[in-house]
Amino acid sequence: MKKLILITFTVICCISIIPYKAYAIDMSVGATTWVAFGDRYDDVKENRERESNSYAFAPTFLFGPVMSVKLSDEFNLTFVYLYGKFEYKETFEGSIGLANQDIKSKAERNDSDIAINYNINNYFRAFAGIKYMSYKIDLSVDLAGDTYTNNSKHISLGPGFGFSGTLPVGYNFFLLGTVSGFYLFSKGETFKDYQIYTSSLLPMTIKVGYNEYGFNSTMAIAYYITPASMVISLGGRFQYFIVDYDNYRYFPINSITNKIYGVTLTATYNFSI
Image: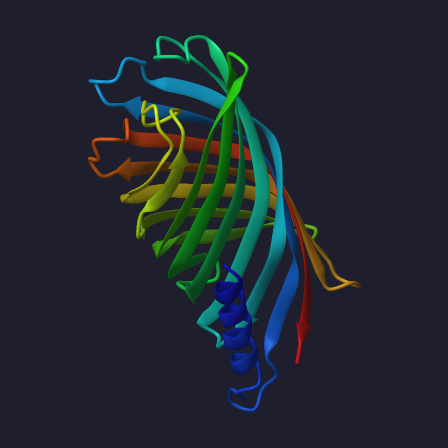
């Protein structure tokens, strides 16, 4: 992830020092936050004793930088990065050795988007780019005085595309909206497991391949503060995506469906160089 962020900033800096028709380069930088809620549904293989599971995440605060560089009257480059930590509890019902046990889990999430935007007209844009998403998950359960744990790393990268719109409503207020889809690829998710997923009596490390796909949608009301050259926006974001795992005999899950939604707040400063 650090390499991705470094490459992004390097590209933006290189673009910003290349003159375009001898005019100044318009840029905006700022920060965004997302107070997110969510739930998850696990589709478990039929030959496993425990049923499919669904559970809700505790409210999570994600935050990160945003940046935009105007390349021409038609094109601009945007970058968004969000980081946060999820926590949740789940109760297994009917599993071997795990019946009615509360399982605690923590996950660090990185979510980054780099896109080229094309102005269709004064109100609508189309964009395409690259999405990066990763999770570092630590999961544990106490059973009969013993602690069983699972640690995994989930990293994926792939293309995304969508549309955005800006609608002025007067008095420096305007509405913002986006809808986008993505399809991500991975080299596989590595699990360091002891009996939570594999139902094995021995610790083991497994690697399971997967792809994930889904969509994002946002809606916000924004206000342009003219003296400060700043834009403040408040709105909501909804993200839906499915993780499809390869068929691996030691791994009990076919797919995971994620829904994440909540309130967003963004502030950006506009300037020219």
